[in-house]
Each structure stands twice: as structure tokens, then as C-alpha cells.
Length: 360
Ligand SMILES: NC(=O)c1ccc[n+]([C@@H]2O[C@H](COP(=O)([O-])OP(=O)(O)OC[C@H]3O[C@@H](n4cnc5c(N)ncnc54)[C@H](O)[C@@H]3O)[C@@H](O)[C@H]2O)c1
Image (cartoon, rainbow, N blue to C red; front, side):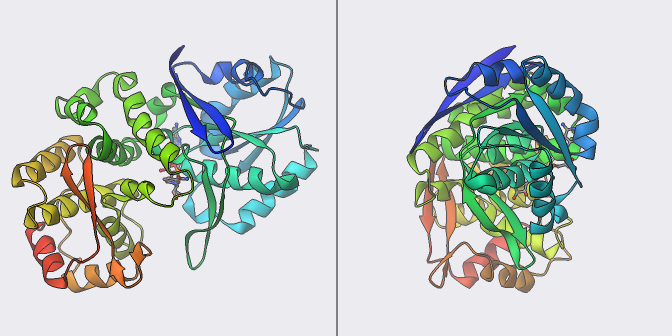
């Protein structure tokens, strides 16, 4: 059942995001009904073993029932396989499957599958259409929206990529039932972030605990925050920077944990630090920091910096982060619900004070 349909305007057109339940069984129909539909029967589904075992059968049946002939490509699970080598294996199988320029590729999985499949679609035969079937909360509220697709390079994440808008995003919230709790929590950090940067009502809903209840109540709101930002800044020239709230500190924590810390956990800690820096600078009230912290804690996200990460190491890790303009580290600081400020003149002393105040 479709609960919401959100249209994303892009420089070249528009695409729909469908949000609802039992949508994987309708993929074939939804895609066949798209205005631009004139697709080859042959199509491909890219997934990994874990997600594929749980959810691919429904997509395959739905596509077969709508005159498509899907070929399933399974790649290994995990960020460490988001590489050019895996991409090459995907190209090999797309050729093997005899896809043509009218073929569609379906990305069934979390952000790793979406990013890699999107990059394959952007480049295979100079570009074929692709559909995002996000299966993690993070992919639903963030990675599947906005057209950024990429693979990692040994020297850094997402260094090889493109902008490629999907034909459609189909977010079936039933997928979240099989998602491990830690992955769900990690996605919730981005949902909270969207509340802070763009939707006070979303933040209030989360504060009263509605994230535990019906996902369909708040997920479309969280999606809309990103949609509105990417519509205004499709090629990441300005406003998209808002989406990096908590990421300057967050990336440093992830890096110092050798990437054992989940991205959402890093963002959670990073948002607390950003809010504290904002309060130190009188950009926001101290009470706002407390509200953000309380909400993150209630969700089960971390709000205290691990003591084995020294202040010097955190600052070193931050200064090699790519969110720099010239030689200044850029911070996004929350002012109030729905308002952030970009600052690039933060001193080392200020950062030290924030880190110390965010320890137990
Ligand atoms: N393109 C963008 O704008 C954008 C934005 C944010 C993040 N990203 C990228 O997204 C990636 C992270 O995405 P992620 O957090 O979804 O991680 P992920 O894709 O690695 O998925 C997390 C884990 O959950 C499993 N999983 C996925 N769906 C499941 C389900 N329904 N049931 C059970 N298990 C399931 C996966 O197999 C994996 O083990 C990163 O590579 C990041 O760079 C991209």
C-alpha cells in the first residue's frame, strides 16, 4: 500500500519516491506505470546475499509478473566491497545478462548497494536507468535520495562517483522489520539530523517517542527534508552542506575507531559536539543542546566521547577530514530547530573545550 508519494524535481526532470508497505510486491507494476516506461524486458537486480535471501524473491516475482525478465547479481556484503573490483564484477554480469540501453537496473539493499548500483547504471552503456529499492533506514532517508552515487578508493570513501538520478525510489517500510537494531539506530541519527536542520515538527514527534511507533508517521517527513535540500542544490554547490551537520566531528570519531563505530553513532556524537560548540558561541541556547542529547540518548545513540580517543587525536583526525574550505575546518552549527549556521573560524581552544565537555 502506497502511503506517500514524494516527487523530487531534478535539473533534468523529476522522479517519484514511493513510501509504504508491501511495495516490493508491486515493483513491476509501479515501474511499468511510470510515464517514461518504455523498457526492455531484460533487467537486472543488484543485491547482496543477506538482503537477497530475505527480499529478492518478492521483487523477482513482481517483475516477472509484469513482463520483465530479471537477472539477479549478488555481490558480497559490506562497505569493504564498495570498490572498483566489485563494480567490474557487476559490469561483467550486466554484459552476461545482455542488458541493453533500454534496460533498468534495480538496486535492492542499503546505501552500499544503492551507491554502487547507481554508479554502474551511470556508466554502463553510457548510462541506463536505475531504480532504488532501499532496505535500510539510512538508505531510505538519505542515500537513495539526491543522485550521488560512488565507489570507494583505498585512499578515501566515495572518491570515484557521479551524479545519477534514479527513475524512482521505492521505500517499502516492511524492509525495516528484518534490519538489525543497531542499523536501525544508525539510520535514526540521520532522521534526528533532518529534524534539526529542517523540520521542527519531525523533531517534536521524535521527542515524544513516535519513532518507536508507526514508521510511516515520520519517515516521509524525514525524507522530505532531504528532498527539499537536494532540489535547491542538486549538484552540491551550497545548501547541501547542511546535511553535514555532525559530520565534521563524526567522521573523526569513525576514523579513530578504525571504522568500527557505525556512521550513525559518529553522527550522533558529532551532533552533540556541534550543538555544544553552538552553545559556547551563543548561537543556540544550552537548553537546545540538552534536548538534542536527550533525544539521541532515548533512541539509544551515543552522546559521550569514548575516553580512549584523546583530544589531540580527535583534532588531528578532524584536520585531515575533507570538509575544509582552503585551510579552515567548516562546521555546521545548529541555531534552533530548522536553522543552522556555517562557521569556519573555530579555534583549537574552542574545539578542546567542546571535546572535554562531551566526555563522562
Ligand atoms: N549517496 C548518498 O547520498 C549517500 C548518503 C549517505 C550514505 N551513503 C552511503 O551509504 C552507505 C551506508 O549505507 P547503509 O547504512 O545502508 O549500510 P549497508 O548498505 O552496508 O547496510 C547495512 C547492513 O544491513 C544489511 N541490510 C540491509 N538491509 C537489510 C534488511 N532489510 N534486513 C536485514 N539486513 C539488511 C546489509 O546487508 C548490511 O550488512 C555508505 O557506503 C555511505 O557512503 C550514501
